[in-house]
Image 1: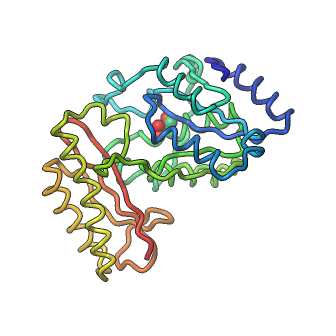
Image 2 (image 1 turned 120 degrees about the vertical axis):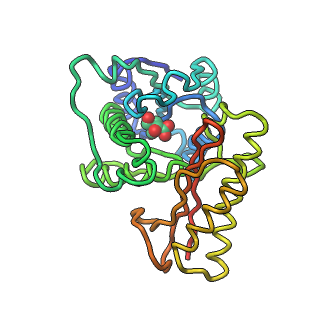
Length: 288
Ligand code: PAF
C-alpha cells in the first residue's frame, strides 16, 4: 500500500493504475477506522471476482475535514490514530492511502465552496448549518484529485449520501456513488467513530436508537400509513428507549428525502439523538 500526503502523489499513482487498465474506487473517510469503513472496502471486493479485484485500484482518504465542523463541535476532539488506520487499511488491501494536511486541501487563499441547497437544509443540516457545504466541498476536491469511477459512502449518513448524489448529478460528475449498508454492534448500535465518546451506560442507551427505528418500521409493517403518526411514535420510542434528547425523528421519502404525508412508497426513518453530550444519527429504510 502506498501512503501519500500529497495531491500529486495521488495523481501519479492513479495515473499508473489507469495505464494498467484498472478501475479506480474512492472510499473517503475521516479516519478512526472501524468495521463500517472496512466493510466499504469489502463491498468493493465482494461483487467482483478475484480477477476483477486485481483490476480495481482502491484509494482510501483519511482527512478530518475542518470545514464540516461548526463552532463548538468536536473537530479538535475527533479521534485520530493514523498509525492504526494505516495498518487496518493495509490489512484490507487498500492500494493507496491519501492522508492530506489541511493545507493540501485548503491552501491559503482558498475561497470556493460547493453548496447543495434544499436537500442540505433540513434534518442534520438544520442543526449543523454549513456542515453539508463542508462535506460537499471536500468530497468535490477528493473526487477531482482521485477522479474515481466509483466512490463509496456509508448508509449511516443517509442524508450525506443523498446530498452527494444530488451534487454529482447537478455538477455532472462522471462517476457512480455506492451506498454501503450500516454495520452494527450486536446491540444494534450503528458503528460510528463518535461511539468512542460513549461510556458503558451511554452505549446501552444508544442501542435504543436502532430498537426505536425498528419498532417504527414494524408499525408501518402493520399497516400504519400516516407518516406524522409514525414520526410521533418514533420520537416517543426514542425518548423512552434512549432517555436521550431527541433532535429529530422523521419519516422521509427514500428517493429524495422530501417530507411525506401518506406512506405509499419506500421511506427512510431518520433520527438524531443526544446521548449525554454525544450526538448520534441513524436511519432505517422501509420498503413499502
Ligand atoms: O462520512 C464521512 O466520514 C465524511 O463526511 C466524509 C464523506 C469523509 C467527508 O469528510
